[in-house]
Length: 128
Ligand code: 9YT
Image (tube, rainbow, N blue to C red; front, side, top):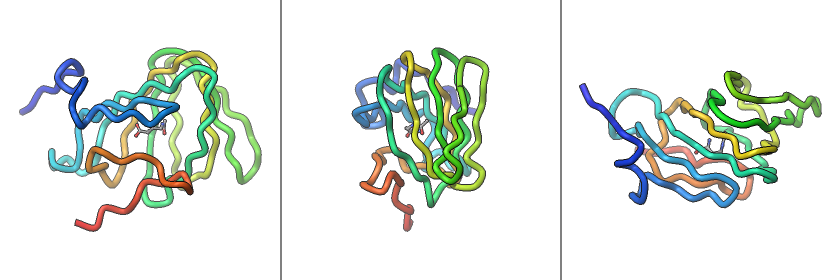
């Protein structure tokens, strides 16, 4: 078994500053779980274009509030504490932080750990 503490990730290469968000990568590909887990803060007042074409992501909000706009239908999905959204269709979306929003993100396939978004809002495919 392994135990990962947020305090052990802070300030390491698994503590990734994406500009509009900071993502603390608790479990990554190297841990061999088949998925990755991040503790992420979406910053208040930000809007981020995201399109994970190569990954499925579930996002569970544990603090704060924001909203997601799915771009296929322009639907606005309010997100707040105790709410999970799942990008089960690789949905292209805008992510807005209204307050600072703390979320737990699970990715399949797992992130290698240091990804930041490309210009198209995606993370690259891990070729290993
Ligand atoms: C919720 C979301 O997609 N935020 C952007 C950052 C990303 N989830 C990550 O790498 O933690």
